[in-house]
Each structure stands twice: as structure tokens, then as C-alpha cells.
Length: 583
DNA sequence: GTAGGGTTAG
Image 1 (cartoon, helix red, strand yellow):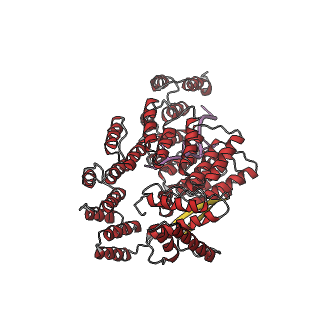
Image 2 (tube, rainbow, N blue to C red):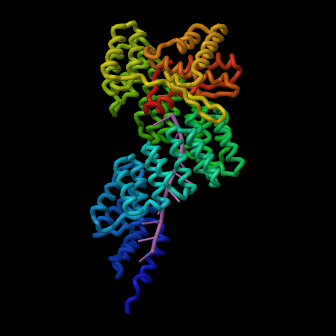
Image 3 (cartoon, rainbow, N blue to C red):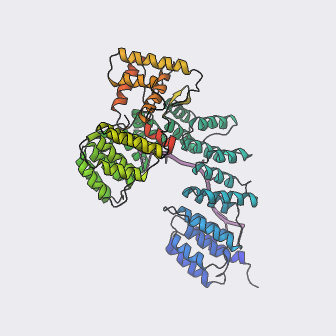
């Protein structure tokens, strides 16, 4: 009498459990094929799962094996879908597999399938596919699975459909820690700090204790909002609750402190870490670089290399931008070579740093040649950097070419027209200035309202230009006049008082971006008169004038003020992360 | 019968 299949299969199971590498797996596979069980779906799916999912697996082997299975069961489909999502190169392969699975009609998706496909959709932001998976989840009655729920929530959040994510969240009757963390992280990712923190409070009210992952989300919300007081409170909360200051939390704290202007606190956290990975070093180096602590940033980079931690593309953005900010052209070139030697392939952003480096050092010709020699097609950021360089140097003749390329690439970005109008104005080419205004009108391009934010008593207030709906708008204007007057009396001519005068008097219609920003920031500064210490995150680029205003205002009010990073602001308002020299 | 959600840096 033959042995029951299950008993015979047990050795395969335990063999696979103990399998150390692919070489052993191939032996197990060969042995298995020769055995009487050679065609059992269970054994094959175990072998497939190892090659597709295990850390020592081989997805190519899994693909070959999978192709030979005539009618894969749901377990095998799931292994392949998940396995293909785990490869570092993002692809739509898992989604195609899922479609094939549905078409095959042999296996039906279960909660694992749906969770894995949703993850794949969120990695590549495949919104319409994910929507269909949502329908399937409902059709197959899989919404009750907490894994499907979190998968959906996270999918919408990664696609920046935060309202849909919230709908899913609200529909979850039994919200666990993961669901709360995912929703908080979703709000944090797009900078909705009040929502993130509100939910964090709610979570505690219903008795769910946050863990390390929740805290990373909360800290990153503070970082995005420039909310230093809140960030400090969260740090104290972590200490108080005995939550472990692990690698991820420490890195998030470094980033938060750096973005909120408290670079010393960032360094404190960094110095207190026992283990530091690429991201921890990277956050600290980038933090120092954006604060203009170029020497420290470069020293830290050397220390990183000494510690045998491999730098990645972000590390080099920190290093190269540090060089750019200090005009260290030859150092920048040296680091560029180091980057190549260490096998970090330069991305568009790195080319951008080099163009910036050359432009800031006044080497416009070289920058222009560098752009023309780029092996990848330069994007709008590269051209804009070059145009900004032209505007500042006033001697370079290729500005027109750069300007044309910029408008070709981004005909609908208001920032470009403003920049070009400023460029032509700086050269007294008034006909071209008005041509820009006309072009802008023809394209129906509207200036995006400037916006700034300040944190007061744990709540982040946003101010948008032209928004007169504030109930105290008259008082606000009065106070702005008062600030302008104090600035004038403090003798800080010429432009600071002019700016604040503009702030009050400038007509909305004629206000170009730069005025909008000043107005918005003045609104933010206005809040410094409130009986709390207000911090606005430091402007990161071309911040000379901005610093000046900050110094004056802080002198007047005797308070610490940091001006909000307008790069992040721009990213938040219109999805653009470009930065040109408005100040 | 096998397995699985949420995590930070420009």
C-alpha cells in the first residue's frame, strides 16, 4: 500500500526549511523530480517559493520553473507576484502576472494575492490597476482581511489619493497598529502634518500604543512641516515611552532636526548612534550640506568612507551640493570621480549639482559645455539652473538657448516665465520682458500663490498669498505695516523695508512669484508677534537676503526665526521640486 | 497544507 502523500512530502518541506542556498535548492529540486512525487503541486510550490522569495533565492530560476508548471496553483502565483515585487528594479511584472492569473481561470485570487498585487501597484503608482484590484477584493469578499485593508490604504496613500486612503481607513472596523501607522505615514508623506498628528493623538485615545514605525511617520510629518517644537515633543515622547531609538527612528530624527534648522540636535542624535547605515550617514551629510556646514559635511563623508559604509546617490547629492554652495569646483570634480569609482551611477540630480557648482562659481561656459555633453537628455531643472546662472552672471550669451529649452520642456510652469522675465529685466531687455508676460498669458499660465507656514502651539498654520479670508485680515495688514515701520526705523535699507512695503501694498495681480513669496513669508513672520517662539525652516538656497530679513525681524522681536525652506514648499504646492533664485 | 500590511535621506 503506497504511503500517503503528506508523509512523503514532509522531508521536502523540512529540507527546504533548512536549505541554505540555491546550489542546495537545485539538488533538492533534482532529487524531487526523480522521486515519485515529481509532479506534486505542493513540493513544486515550496521549491518555487524558495527561489522566488528567500533572501538567497534566484528569481530567474523561479521564472523558469514557473513557466514549466502547466496550471500553477494560487500559492505559486502568489510567490511569483510577490517575488517579482521584491526585485530592486521597479517593474509592472507582478501586475502582468496577476492579469495572467485571472485570465488562466485556474486559480482564484485570495487575500495574499490581493495584498501582494496592491503592494506592486503602490510601488509603481499603478493607480487604475490598483482600483481594479480594489474591486476584485470586494468581489471576492476579501476586504475583511487586515492585510488587504492595509494594502489598499497604503496603495491609495502611495498614489497620493489621501482621501481614498482615509475612506479605506474609516471602513476598517477593527483598526490595528499597522492600519494606524499606515494612515499616519500617508498623511506625513504628503506633508499633512496636522492630520498626521491628529490621528496620532486619536490612536492613543483609543488605546493603541504606537511603535517604532508609527513614530517614524510622526517624526517625518514634523520634518515636512518644519515643526521643531512638535518634533522635540515627539522625541521626548519616544524617550518617555521607552520606544527604542533604533536606526530608522534615529535617522528620521536627524532628518527632522536638520530640516527644522536644529542642526546641532541632528548631530547629537547622529553622534549618539551605535550603528549607522548609508541612510543615517546620508541624512547627516545632506543636513550639514543644506545648512552650509560644508567642511563638516565633507569631513563626515570621509569618516563614512573610513567606516566602510557604502555611499549611495543621496550621499553624493549632499557632497556635491556642499561643494556647490562653497564654490569648491575642483573638490566637486574630485568627488564626481570618486562617485564613478565607487560605482554610483550619476543621476539627473547629480548632473544638476555639477551644473549648479559651475554656475555658482561663475563658470558659465563650462557649465554650458557640461550640459551639452551630458549622456542623458537634460531636464528642465538643469536648464533652469543654467538660466539662473546666466541671470546672476550677466555676461553669458547662451542664456537664450537655455531659456528656449526650458520653455520647450515646461511651457506651463509659471516659475519659468517669472525667471526669464527677471533675466531679461536684469539686462534691460524690456521688449523681451513683455514678450514673456504675453507668452504666459497666451499659454493661460497663472502664477501659483506663494505659501508659508508657521508652527504655533503644536498646530501648523499655512498662509497663502491673496487669501483675504482670514477673520483678522485688517489687523494682519496693520501689523505688517508696523513691522515695515520698525524695519525702516532700524535702518535696514534698501530692500528689506521695500519688501515689507510691497508686502502690504503690492497688488495681487501684478505680484510675481517673488512678491507672493515675500508676502506669504511676511504673513508667517507676522505670527512671530504671537506670544510663542515661531520657527520657519531656513531657506536653503540663495538665502542671503532671506537671512537678512530673518536677522532683522528676530532682532526686533528678540526671537528665534528660521525661514521655511521654499524648495519643499514648492514641491508641496504645485508638485514641482525645482528651485530658482527668487530672492 | 505552504505565506503576508505600516518605516527615514536630495
